[in-house]
Image 1: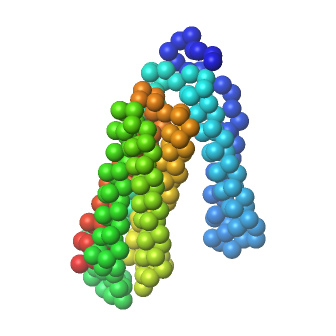
Image 2 (image 1 turned 45 degrees about the vertical axis):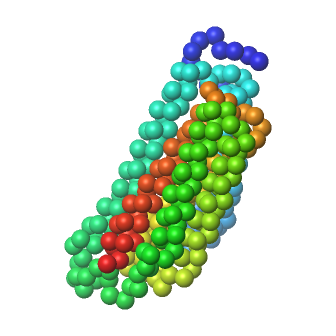
Image 3 (image 1 turned 180 degrees about the vertical axis):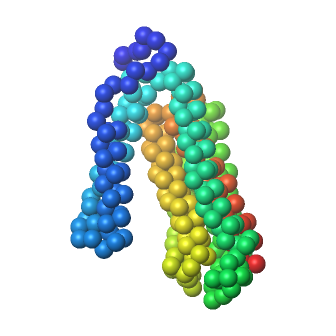
Length: 264
């Protein structure tokens, strides 16, 4: 196993950052074309998404090889990765702030176009005490389970860590299924004025983050099962736990502001 001669990691040349940026541009372009009814827009969007998922997989595979098998991720490198994850989560917080801003801007001072009332006339809001409350319990329980997993890794309790991670993943999939059921049963859509738009943009992007977090946790589970995480070397799992707790907090804000307060 090769070892670094200094505390930092000089990243080897990789085609994946450039390839990923091109696919992100093509994905955006294809989506815009599809929304405006241009021929080939949907095909370009699907192609770019498949290529993007492939690039993500092989890029992260290379990072796992660098950290686990090549030994390039020293304590200083790990500290830098943690700081990068914190900054990424901060950027995600600001991403959701925009949706909350739009929701409160429209609900606190409803315009005459929606009869100056909130929720707008004709919108049958979703009761917060049904599926949303159940999803809140599920997501908070999953947050407790992933914390249990993290502590299990810290103390070298492998069986406990794997079991708790499986519980987290099952709860995550239950949340996603219930969210999809809620969308199917809702009496309004994303085109139902400002309420439908703000509701589906906020909850929909949160659902997307749940899917990303589920994948993040699944990769961590896979690495645990193949003995790639130790009590002192588990930055990937740590970042996955932080991300999942961020998803929990955003959902609590959505439940309180959009489902409960916004539906009064």
